[in-house]
Image (cartoon, rainbow, N blue to C red):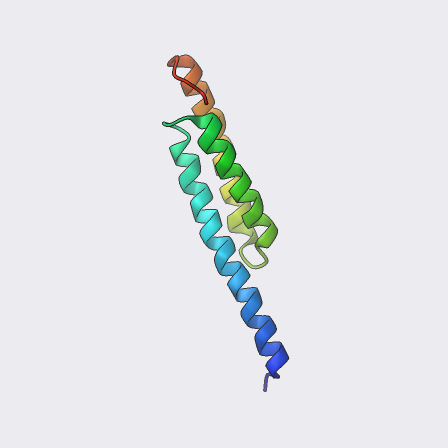
Length: 90
């Protein structure tokens, strides 16, 4: 049987994991948006959100790491697309 302290600690860990999962999903969305809309602004903000998600994650560590890797690739691709298409970066 779980003690009240143990149950409270489990709840706080699961809340942090839930928030980290949502932040990782937001990071993925930001990475996709950085391909088509101001990669200097959107991509950089998405990477910062991804770093926060990686810091919060315990069970969702792989999701946060994958979101950061994907967003980094999208940021680089968005910067290349913006330069080649002569669109504004910031």
